Length: 71
Image (cartoon, rainbow, N blue to C red; front, side, top):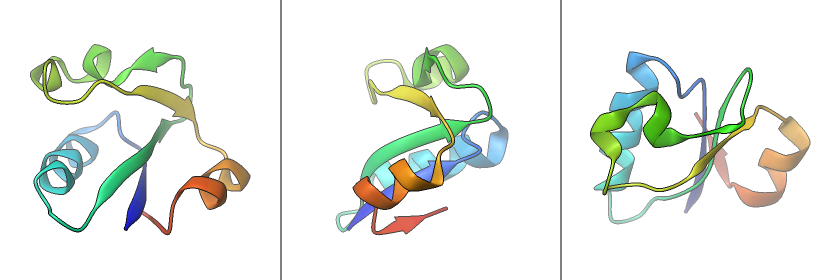
């Protein structure tokens, strides 16, 4: 299942990313915060080498195109 994570810059976002990366049924397709324009590793250096994904500015229309579920 493709999932989006909105509010990924904080601690809860990081923990959710770590849980979903290791879940066999979820594929992270969209990561967002209120600003966008950076890589997820700029927000969370601990994800370096684990997840290479750009953070987008949250957009409900874009999320609905790429994700079955949004957190």
